[in-house]
Structures are given as structure tokens and as C-alpha cells.
Length: 333
Ligand code: KG4
Ligand code: ZN
Image (cartoon, rainbow, N blue to C red; front, side, top):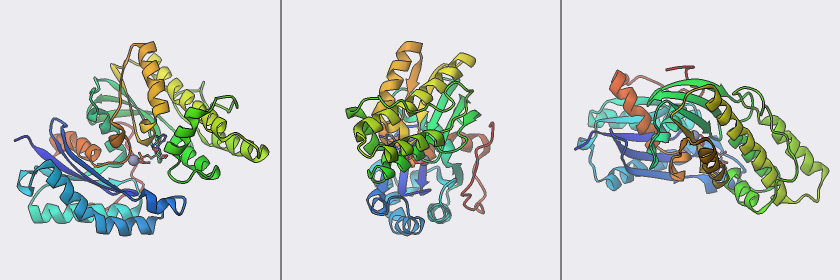
């Protein structure tokens, strides 16, 4: 039987567990979302998130093991998100993973959530070829990285202020679309027109991003024009975000040699972005790899996937690591 890692992810508002083999076959991928509960408050309430993780984490792990058809004896190791994320939420997954590591006598691997997203590029039908240019667009982060091989990357640029997903969520809230904003904004964007000429911040500058100016421009517009057409606002905002994301990918492709492009993180679930990437792939004759939408948003399969190269290169971690809510990715690894 192939070697298997059980991944556990509780960094924000999803309780997730997955079993992934060394050749990155996903045997199970279970996500218990708290979205409906937090939606009532317009965003994630950290104290409530950690309480729900406490009651969900063991049942979710149980389900992941059952769906994969494995028992503890079949596992090679357990991987868990150490950060970045919410302190209380991270601690629940870490405590559960450590307890199982001791009880089942399995090594443990502490994984950076962002490395998890980067590794999710390899979980789609079409696997990346290396070197791969990876764009990570999630609620917490927007960054470009060059991946020489699984687990080996160099950061090329990140956002100076808001992430793309954060801009989506904040504007969706302003427009009364609830939380999380991405999917709702996307649905409206498809029905509207890009006619409002919102700014494309830093589109002609390097590989860094900035989305707070765009967010402010949209907010000012809806305050100035109370009769605004919400579909056109959503379409014009999404078009501005997508233009910037695609322009940065194109600039990186012009300045470096890449065998493929991967786009990961929650915003990679966006059909608007997926359409744009299909066009980019044709125009540039470059392979574009995407995780399935269920592995673009937070999940544990990506945590197990990121753990494999780490485990193979350095072995397991000592059991005394703590949560690291601000854990930054190193510039290069
Ligand atoms: O990666 P993720 O699940 O969590 C973080 O690590 O942040 O990303 C969540 C972000 C949210 O900002 C959400 O609005 C956005 O991804 N998102 C989307 C879509 N689905 C989720 N944005 C645009 N279109 C979507 N369909
Ligand atoms: Zn995430």
C-alpha cells in the first residue's frame, strides 16, 4: 500500500481533514464549513470558530479516515497547519493532531498554510510542470512565487496592503451581499458589464500587488451614486481585479522561464478568473493548472500535499511546536 499522510487544517473557519498518498492521490477530503454561522455576523468571529473546531475536529478526522478506507495503522504520518491563522482555531487542530500522533505513535509534520495553498497546484487533474509560476489569491494573501519543484519556491511579489479576496469580502459587505463575498460578487459580475472604469492598481509596476485603492474607489463610487447598478459595480470590480492578476502573471512570464502556471487559493475557485486563465493559456501557449474548486478554498488535502516533500527532505517535527498565527513564508526555500 502507498504511504499515506493524514492532513488536519483548522486555521480559520473550516474544520478539515484529508488522507493523501505520497504520489498525491487524494483518498478523502472532508471540509466542515462554519460559513453559515459566521455569515450572520458578516465575518469570522474567532471565539466562535475555535469552539466549533473543538466539536468538529474529531468527527471530521474520523470521516476522512472512513472515506479513505484506512485505519491508523495505515498512516505514515500526520500533518497539521501551524499558521498563519487565528490563534484559537490553530490550537484546536494542533492539539488534536498531537494527541493522535502520541496515541497512534505516528510522526507529526507542522505545515505553513500558505505552503499548503502553493502545494494544492498539484492536486488538480493537470499537474504542474516545473519551474512553475504560482499565483496565490486567497482571503488572507495575494502573492506570486516561482516553484522549482514541489516544496521549493522563491517569492516574487506579494500585496502591499489588502489581498484580492479581502477586497472582495469587504466590498461584498458594503454592498450587502453577506460573507464570504467572493462567490456572491462573482455571480453578479457575470450578469453585469465592466463599464465603470475602476483603477487597476500597480498594473504597470513590477510583481507586487495593491488592492486597497481599488477597494476605496469602488466604495466611493457607491456612496456617490446611491442609484448604482450592483451588477455593473460587481462586474467592473471583478474585471479590475482580474486584469491586475493576469497582467502580473504575464509580466512574470516575460521575465522568467516557466514550464507552467498555477493559480491557487480561494479566489482561484472563481469562474470569472478561470475564464480569464483559459484565455491566457491560449494566448501564451502555456499550461495553466488549477486545483479543483473544493481544493482551492481552505482544505486539508493541500496541507498533506505540502507535508510530503517536507517529510521526505527533513523527516518529522519535534512534538513541542506551538501555533504561529503570523507565520511568514521564507523568501526562498
Ligand atoms: O483560501 P481561502 O479559502 O481562505 C484563506 O486562506 O484566506 O480564501 C477565501 C477567499 C475569500 O476572500 C472568498 O471571498 C474568496 O476566497 N472566494 C472567491 C470565490 N470563492 C471564494 N472569490 C471569488 N470568487 C469565488 N468564487
Ligand atoms: Zn487559505
